[in-house]
Amino acid sequence: MQIAVIGGGVSGVSSAIQILEYLKSTGNPVAVTVLSEAFSPNTTGDGSAGLWGPYLLGGTPTERVHRWSKHMHDFLEQIWLSDDAGEAGVCLIPCLRLTTTAMDNEVFWKDIVYGCRQLTQRQLDELNVGRANKYTQGMHFITYTSEPVKLLPYLMKRFQANGGKIVQQKVENLQEFIAKSNYDVIINCTGLGSRECVQDVGMFPVRGQVTRVKANWLYCALLDESDVGNYIIPNCESVVLGGTHQENDNNTQVCPNDKKFIINGCRKIVPGLEHAQHLFDWVGLRPGRDTLRLEAEKGGNKIVIHNYGHGGSGVTLAWGCAEDVLELLKNELQARHLNVPKSKL
Image (cartoon, rainbow, N blue to C red; front, side):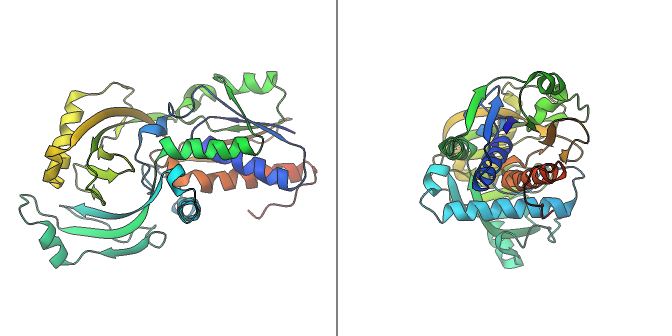
């Protein structure tokens, strides 16, 4: 069986790993190839901080997001408890979610992270010392960061170690690719590229700009949930300052005004950042969609499964969505009487 996964980001590679490892375990002869125009460190996700947390997912059903997110959190926990944590860039990190306005403290994912609790007024008062705009509410929890610039090579190494192949190729039209290729199964994980690849007019860019600085004394992520929306997220060797989420903006160049907004806003949260060494700025276009698309196409001689539209949650959902991709594939193979165990979905 020849399987193509189109897209070299975290969603594509996660899907490829799970498909390859499962089918190998069943004894089925299989070849899985990831095709992509770009691979790490040149994917959309490589510049992000990789903090776990569902974000920019439109109307995607909450129960599905919860399940996908939990499965990824469990996967990151497994890596963190293993010898691979450093190589994969997985870190356990405390997070403060703060606002000067109002906050929904009944977040649907609070049972997934560790020790999620609302800040007391005393704790808020301590954080507000010297602040002109006072925080009115806050939450504290512990979760993971998984830097894509480290996680993606780690996952790709696992994929290739099991016999997976990679091909640098841009697929511009999925139907033409299906018609001309010898693949039996095609998994579409092209993200924002699905605007052209499958002519999905519901896809739109969500521009994100961040600044990276050297501030090794920061050990906590601070997320301002007020209208301004700045955030500070430590990574292994740098700290990510953010950020923007500008819908339908295709500009991939660094904007000086956005950079000023990011740096000044983050310095208001942590004044000591004024002395942090500036490393570089980065811009990426998140794959926005009203709802994440994860489904198998009906009909046709070949199996086609779509997995895209992850908004700002690619890393947060990757492993969980990949599990559903595998289950959909099992369903399709079972329906075609190809001797694969029945799906649990």
